Amino acid sequence: MFLAINFTMRELLLEIFNRLYKKFGEQHWWPADTKDEVVIGAVLTQNTAWNNVEKAIANLKKAGVLSLSDIARVNEELLKELIKPAGFFNQKALYLKNVAYFIKNHGGFPHLSKKSTHELRKMLLSVKGVGKETADSILLYAFERPVFVVDAYTKRVVSRHKLSEDLTYDNIQKLFMENLPLDVNLFNEYHALIVKLAKEYCKKKPLCKGCPLEGL
Image 1 (cartoon, one colour):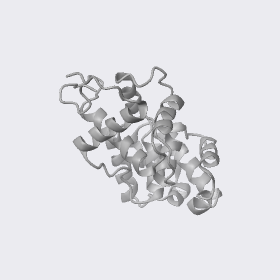
Image 2 (cartoon, rainbow, N blue to C red; image 1 turned 120 degrees about the vertical axis):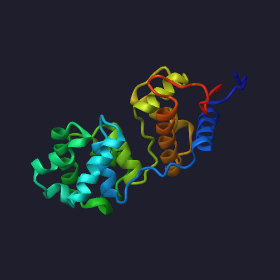
Image 3 (cartoon, rainbow, N blue to C red; image 1 turned 90 degrees about the horizontal axis):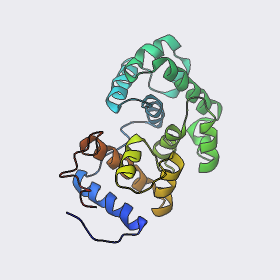
């Protein structure tokens, strides 16, 4: 089915969101109990599937190492062993410690929360092991700032639905942030729904029939 409707980009992005929300419902994302756990998960999820992160987090919980202060003090070799299911464990153990030291040395979440989003993002990106996606995940889910997170799933959906020819991180983020209300809950839910779409329909080999965005 083809819908001959002329949408503005804002209307199109909201239509996509509404269709996904109607199909999948609220996603309750990010699945974490504390801000510390959000930050840890944001680092662990680099270049791996979330189910692998869950295994690593389960190991950390069992070992009583699921706060940033715990990460900072724990033996690095033990940390590597605990997070092994998330892959790249040598690098990620170092990255986790870098982030833990960064937050501790800057007065923790209460002090960092006083920074502007721009300044805080710049500070996070200065930490070795924290790229744009990781920094923005921390900003959105731990600091509750209206920053749109762009991941591989988002790039896939944007590309297949021809929302933009420029698939760089900054351009895709700009696409959403300039055409949607700067709302933490909206960005949270939108990102989660895109992930759900990519897992259910917009896979590497897409299942277009029955997709909630079919015909759009």
